[in-house]
Image (cartoon, rainbow over all chains, first blue to last red; front, side, top):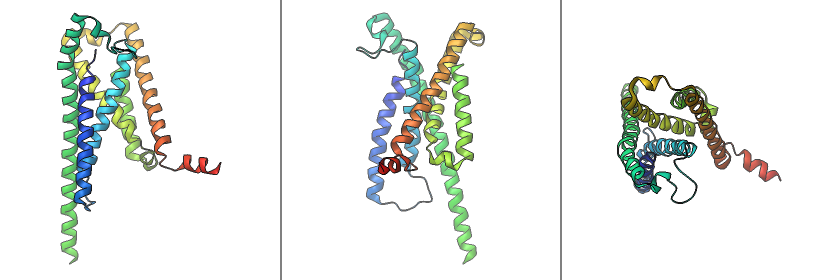
Length: 130
Length: 103
């Protein structure tokens, strides 16, 4: 009905956070290229949230659940349907946002592990060449 | 079917992203985000539906399956159109700039 609105709302928040983190990173002038910046990692979450929500929005349009004119959501016109829509947003929508975020967290953890391993290898290489 | 088509698209685009440097230059990552994001969201939808209707989930009506397949393919095309739009807008190979600069 409108479950995609929850990940969309999260996408708006993470986009704002990404911009703030980017500004902070530029201010700090980090020159360490060996690790992926946090703003870049947030970009992955943004991409999945915006991309997934976009495709889901199209699916809702396909099923006639959203319309290109006000009030945009067909369920809003009927109070019983509105309650059902809100319930779906609270359950499916929240679960979608959580699952995407957890998947992203997993990728970030894996990336961090790889970066640490790489730094360690570089350190050992540096010590042996001295 | 929509979920299956999207997951398949996500896997294929991931393999292309992993093996092909040219594809990475052409921002194929955009497709990865769209397909994986939508796959995860539809997976949740599928789990919720399975909890509601149990075994019936695996034996959908033919008309529903056809509609879902049509939807899945349309979603793939939509994602590809968005990707092409981004390529033309960001112009990573500077092709658009070169062509427009020539005229």
